[in-house]
Image (cartoon, rainbow, N blue to C red; front, side, top):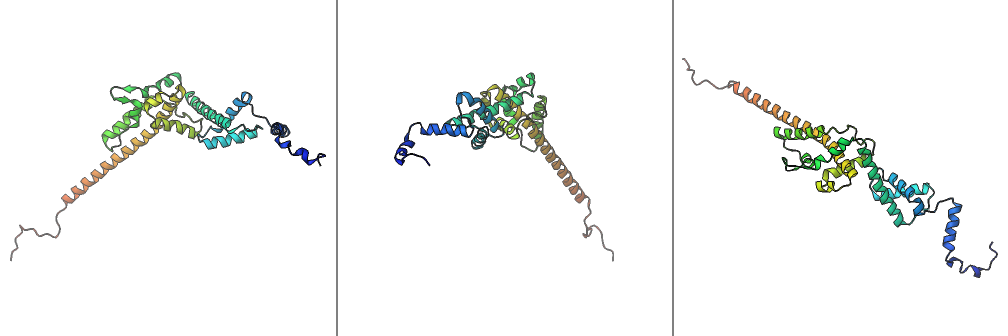
Length: 254
């Protein structure tokens, strides 16, 4: 029991310091850490980067970040600050992924990743745009066009296991950006992001062009076999003598 008249409690909850003092008391009792941006922002961004390691979805990042901050005994900051932390963490996660890709490239190869973005006077477009637009026609010319592109990609000699040490969804995002972004937009990316985007796109194109070449070859082979079969059937029909038809040149003798 509280040994005080009820009238003395009427204004207690209205005291300016009540909420703050109770909050501090609860924090100490629960052994939590009050979030102080100048002291804890770096640690929080590191948690956000981990939360964004395999996703760019804002909801997933914020859910994971809140969970990890609670697990680290932090009192969650206001939503505005929490969103700022999440954005910074996602940016850091992207940079870490780009750095992991670039670390697998030597200096010469990193520099060569600028070549597909340069305009080629003979093609009238950049090499990357040319690579993206491989022939779709099932013809010998179409197959040769695919093989020309495949030769260019293979000549770059990218490491066969490029990006295997980063999450597949993050690697896919780089490749997807490289596949749809305008060339001048990619050129405006930061250096690390630009190199990582071009490298992953070229790596994906190597697989796509190989599949396209196999499909075109199989289709052309099928066409040749079909034509050969048709010729054989026509030749066989032409060589067969008519059956059941009397020879008009044979005279009957009575």
